[in-house]
Length: 55
Image (cartoon, rainbow, N blue to C red; front, side, top):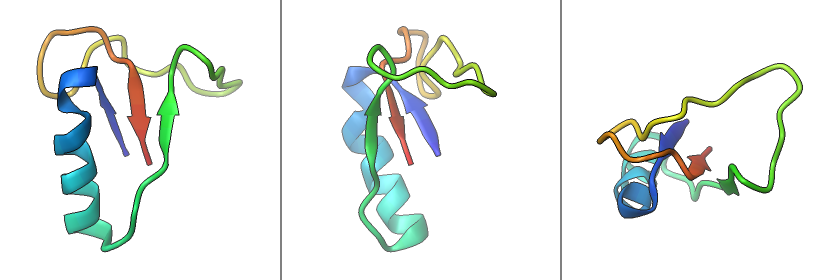
């Protein structure tokens, strides 16, 4: 699972495919709420705001 900004979505997809050998689901964090989890506010690869969850 990767929480990333728009600029790092492709990198996160590549990392997911390399690790799991399957296509990930991309979740827009603005359109989704989680009852038991608060996503990080920053991208895992830079300091931009997190926009997507790659799972």
